[in-house]
Length: 504
Image 1 (cartoon, rainbow, N blue to C red):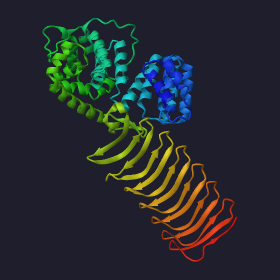
Image 2 (image 1 turned 45 degrees about the vertical axis):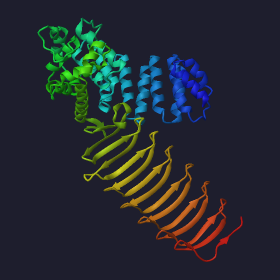
Image 3 (image 1 turned 90 degrees about the vertical axis):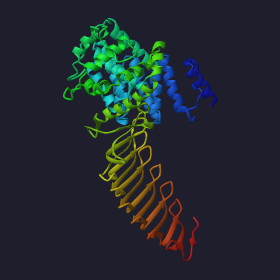
Image 4 (image 1 turned 180 degrees about the vertical axis):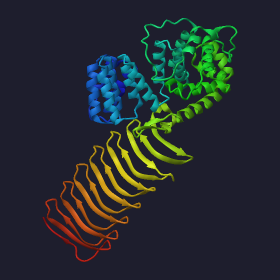
């Protein structure tokens, strides 16, 4: 443990070479080995030893543990850094079969397509990312940068503004403010635009781009709805003024950003918005003004958070092979912690089909609720590695039908049947080695009929019969070689008659 701590100290300080010397001493059987392996991968990527990073990532993937998604992401990063973008994309697509809701992999696919100048595919995957997590800041930043490179200022501003709304006060937010300010307050040369079609349909903001690029809002006669009168706020104000939501437009920017921004402007909240936006500014003169309107900013945060959630409730998400309206639920209530579930509620009652996820993005639970809010039909639970954990059937909240559980490696652990909430029929328990451990029978929730137990090696150990939940008749025990060991007469679960024991 001391070795690991020393390694982590060097790792935290950015001394990756020194960290690796300690980490290489950690035994593969150490309980922290997998976590340390993730840090070894990062060290090698930082040192541009990409082949080593890939090899270690593959070892981590084979461990099939809780950090498996990190190994996939880091292997993909190493491949990308080696200019093997298509290999990275194929890797992420493979991983998404196990972790279909892990939006960071969708984002990375988009990033790799963009680096290959395959913009149509990149934009499609940026869109898929925001379908799963509309609050993922990295994607909004990437979209803003792509728009800026094409000279599409209105769309760039919309994406960048959302990034700041989601991550106020961060160093990155301040950097975005600097870029936005330069973009709208002076001639910014757009180097070699590619003529990218940013949206398959709609999203024509050419008239707004023209106004922004001609600096009309910087004229003295233009009235600003904020005490912070700077070019950026003026240009954003004219953007919000000119935006008009058109439901039939079908454009990505129209559906993703315009409703919120138009609502901010029309509801008279632009001034509070401007102060919230500039909370990310490092300029002292801005901080002094913002401090005077702290209560306004707080109220805006509460309102904007609710509006963003409301707008996202209107956005469909891929579910069961089609786009459906589902509420997105996040771990500990924050999108930064990852998607926890997709499913709808009416009041406190759960409705319709739900999916619940592990933090890795792997499916954890899937099933449906009926109109009364009770579980109905087939429900499934999954281990973190993607293998089935439990498969059950419900009839109006009661277990009814086949019931199966599985070990983490996918092998069966238990097979049984329920009827109206009670065990009914055959019931077989398996050991981790795959051997049958018990064979029982139930009727109306009670043991009934012949029963067998087996040694760990698979040979018969006990035989007996149950009547109304109690052993009735001879309980026979056998040695592992199959020879009889003892016979115990029973009646209603109690021992009666003569007990007989045999030598080997």
